[in-house]
Length: 494
Image 1: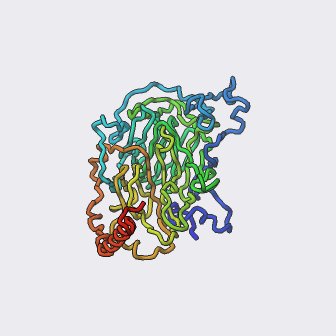
Image 2 (image 1 turned 180 degrees about the vertical axis):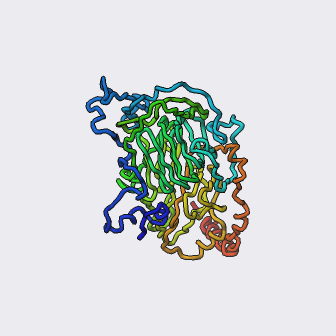
Image 3 (image 1 turned 90 degrees about the horizontal axis):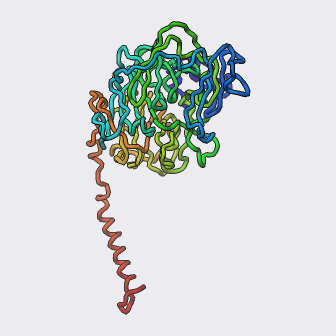
């Protein structure tokens, strides 16, 4: 059994259940190096107060809030949206967010992009299967200045679309905060932990975990060394748990394993703070003389959260054939098309493969989804080129892909055996029904390389080896057809 005293130990476990050591130790919900406490659940209505008795009951906006606090509401949906999609939170804080000193335009972060309409000359579409080696970590960058965009679809001003980014950082955000006014960030650290302060409280997110910071929520990121990761940004939608269908009530990502921050406030006076806003893909700066993270208490259902990917409950075939990759979906986001999601976040983590009398590797396929993959740690088979932790691999919709002939041949001639796959590994996929356009920054990167088409040159024509047998079968079939097409007097039969 693993000691689990260091973050790397969690990369070796098959599933979080292994940390419970068959009930011989008290169960625990957090990695042992996580310094914070959280509220469990997903899509719940939560409440948290750093000072007991702060939240008013029976109403949201009293004439006088306790301790002289200001009441502020974040409303993330239409006021009349149905209850199941109505998103809001009430905050009780020392100074409201409106207390700032105005906005000024600032240059966009180099390499970022939000407009993925074909009219934009800085993005391009291509059917070529692309990949990027791990991006160099930008020395001296923090979370915001280290953002770079790979590709996406749509435009945030249309409230429909998404973008995919990588981020690198070597320094923490100090007297600054960031607000994405365009959409929700799903953040996947790949190297280095993120200590994220939000208005709702702190989140500690390390490789093997993810977090979601939603539109309009202020946050700052502290790092502990060279840091890198992936981001899926969605516009006009929010992430939710996928439907389970015939799986029933349990499986995949369970709601109780999502963790939300507890209120923790900082009150300062006459400190210079800057707040960076991203709006329509442009960047703006405001200043204020008080800390943005002065929320003493809050309640609502529009709250950032995190999730440990080692808790994902994999399902799969126990007889024959692959099940569609929707079984690997952690979170999904709806689009305006009721039968096609805007985005899915999938993981490929340790699991058993036991199907027999079947072809085990991914079959050769074309599908409507655009697929952008990353690797958090470990190894991942099935990519057509070198795929390292921190790499990116991209295939647009309807482009054929599959394994090399050597892997096809080996899987075809040997009976499959029961095996653990993706052991010590977690790969991720950002998938969408939308067509991705690639940014100039990513297209011109010296880390980009194309999947080598020659890897499929030796997909030999096995069928022709059976030509003699096929001709006998076809000849026999023709003779049978000729005999049954006429009767004894030469008249055609019905």
